[in-house]
Image (cartoon, rainbow, N blue to C red; front, side, top):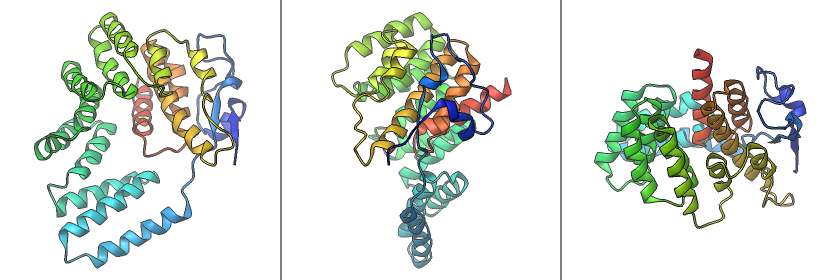
Amino acid sequence: MKRCLSLLIVTALLSGCSSLSGSFSTDDRTPSELILAEPLQVNYQTEIMLMRYSQLILDAKDDRSRQARYFYERGLLADSMGLRSLAHADFQRSLTLQPDFVPAYNFIGLYMTQTEQFDEAYDAYDSIAQLDPENNYVLLNRGIALYYGERYRLATDDLISAYNESPNDPFRTLWLYYPEYEVSPQDALAAVKTRYSQHIDNNWSWNIVALYTQELSETQLLAKLLDGLDKTDPAYNKILAHRLTETYFYLGKYKLLSNDNRAAESYFKLALSNNVYEFIEHGYARLELSRLAAK
């Protein structure tokens, strides 16, 4: 079903959102030009699978390895539904049963970072590095944790290594930019421009990087939100929700660097509005809002 909501009705969708009447950026742009997807909903099959895993966990009580796997898989389902406390508890149970179960450490690290329990996050990621040295994501996720923990040079080291493993990933480029910016804004700008110039595919998300390189303005980026999307595609709304979650989060980060906290807050709330719980941008948007509220 093709439904796209303008920001004219965003206050009905985002209870508690700061006022969006009038433009909240320095661009010549009105709120009605912003786009939202229909928020994603948990489907019936996912709810049934959540109950099914509860039974599988009981059935596997004599097999610790299998039970650990089922706790982890139920945790994945709970995470995708936004049930973070249940998911966190299931990942912890998985590790209690099988302390070398690497995938669970990744989620523990994410949750600890998003609640600013950084020592616990570092411990989780260090466990992954020891148990699975070839893991492709530990450097990225640990680098993000170090960035939020304000250990910028260590974060840069991890995120450079993560970038070098996948230099054509626009999101690794963005996350590397943030700690580099904290060390030297001028050097960070030069570096992100160089990395952007080297990308070799047409991934839409490079448009977000182009904002940071100053090749696109905020208004131009927003004008491209529907580029390449087919409204007749049954997956159109889901794809749009994913794109908007990412775009609005990184716009929020961009506005923070411009010291426009009000605009950043609005963008982070827009990133949450699509209910794409499994994206790290969703969890980090909550962290950013919590930090803004504490200022």
